[in-house]
Image (cartoon, rainbow, N blue to C red; front, side, top):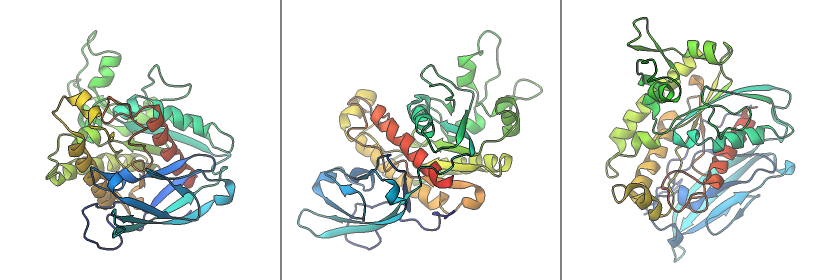
Length: 365
């Protein structure tokens, strides 16, 4: 199996007078008959992506008005370099960068077993992208899959489970504990009040983080093969857009702690960290949610910097079980969001997240 964590591109491969901050992970993953895209707005820092010309050179796929996109076939299995050039309206080159498209075989992992645990915030709680992962894994040519987790919302399709909760952050899974009061913190309320990975100590008043017990109680005493994480929005949403680094690094310290706990308890598991997804391109979505308190451009600047620092701190960490998934590339910032929500996709956007995780998993199978 090839390793794609050796290099990453935070900014353009060449230096030009530009503030666009072209930001690319090293690889985007794809699978035959599953559409995969790189949306122009998701790789640069600008309020006006339409003012620039995005050129993609690759032997597969095509560049459209707002994205480069591909729906590979079996003939495309393998690696395809993509060269990206961004120009201004006059044709002046502003940024250049490279990324590799890796297309996995349709039958990658066939005959194997896959125990999958999905961890996240409200985007996971919505259960749309876990449902899409299940749908794609159920196609012919895939491993026999089992989703682990204690959370099975009404919207979950058969066999779908996860640990995704609205408003949660990396630190929440490490620290959130509320002593149970009979008749008050039972059932769904208890689920929101305490991390699924924390259990009451002997005194009943304090909690103990214990993944081995979680695996024993809820995973048939077997660790997962793959754990996916999609977090970062709640962690960083209130950061200062002008100076976000201190807050982002604090958040990534918590990410390191949670990932280290998983690597310790499940040393053979692959820990797949999704790069935090971009916002709705419409300010109206933020106005509908936040009534002027938070704005699209503020969160876009934070999210873009968060992705840069995730690449900086979490790349080349395979020895720690950590792998990055380019979930931020394949979400349509226009068609993948409703008009009235800033950060929560519509079914199209959620399905794109699911496709990104699925295609990445196929590369590891």
